[in-house]
Amino acid sequence: MVVSQEVVSKAEEIADQVIRSGKHILPTLARLCLISTFLEDGLRMWFQWNEQKEYMDMSWGCGKFLAHVFVFVNLVGQLGGCVMVIGRWKVNIACGVLFFILVLQTFAYSILFDMQFLFRNLALIGALLLVLAESRVEGRSLFAGVPSLGDNKPKNLLQLAGRILLAFMFITLIRFEVSFLQISQDILGSILMVLVTIGYKTKLSALLLVVLLSALNLYHNAWWTIPDHKPLRDFLKYDFFQTLSVIGGLLMLVSLGPGGVSMDEHKKEW
Image 1 (cartoon, rainbow, N blue to C red):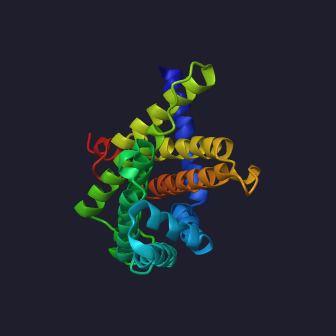
Image 2 (image 1 turned 45 degrees about the vertical axis):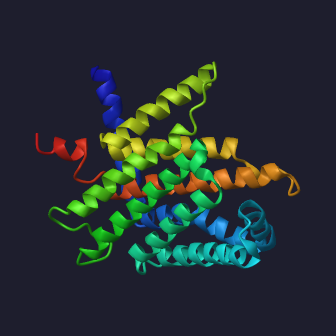
């Protein structure tokens, strides 16, 4: 038990050093990762305008005009939202637009009835909530990037909801395969995700999840290795950037901390 505690303490010390070293670039890196799936999908709308329009027309029989409107809204909403998030301009509006796009796509592409895609969209919503939480911190600070003092209940609730929703991403990665590597991955990932959700050893757990998810993403979703003409390339590309966005949410959590509604915060009062 003592050895385990020493290992955890050492790991936390290393994690703190990494976070301190990258504290100036961490929020920006988190935002870049987080918007990646929206940026990729917005560009997809531009380069595949006719294919997306025809798909909507055939799927819903909505006519060419409404199909064009759907593609246009997705294109402008996602690219505009990404620019606003990166530029830290009207972040609450930008997150609202991106949230609307997620809901719109959930119904338009019948994702509501596909648990894997639905859970991933929920995880993306969690990541957006963490961006909102960060904007509240900056908005209440004298200088941008300096955490505000005092209780901030809306921010704490946003961080709590964001942590819970991020957990849905890892659920989609659990595979029931009888192999030592897969079982180890499922157990480790599940433990880390539970720790992030309840807000215990949050920064260390989130950082370890970033490493784990990054490795799994590069291994399972290597879309650049698939020829352009194969449909699998688009599916892997979609999964890759969605996972990258959730990694951005975890990095935001590493930067912000778990918030007031967490075990880490309550430990300070004990």
